[in-house]
Length: 147
Image 1 (cartoon, rainbow, N blue to C red):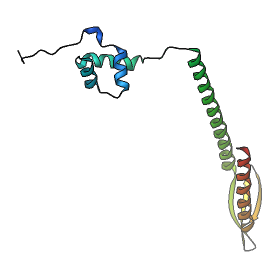
Image 2: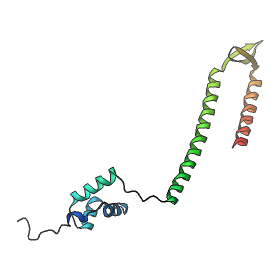
Image 3: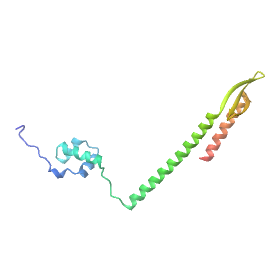
Image 4: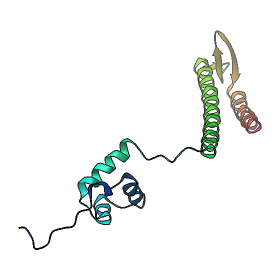
């Protein structure tokens, strides 16, 4: 009717999830998979949909379970370390948020009044700059020791 030759179609059961998944893993498109399997694209799309909903999983073995367990334990350790770092950062930020810095002048000498939770100290500006520099160096060296 529409052409002189009739296209050969693969039998209904020959387009399996495994074959489609194998060709998909090779990077082939749905049209290329259909051509390779000798079928039209609708059964390929149907199998692709099945694969996405229920992925093909390798059978479980003791080795694969042990590897998964190791991988999850390593991931848990990394997440625990990240959680500790986040908690430390949060504590530092909360501490810094409570710290108040106010510029002052005493006998024509510029300074800084530092207060926290109702207690405070005043510093000359040069002394405060030195304190900040040495404090930063101290924190950096302390952080290196922790790591």
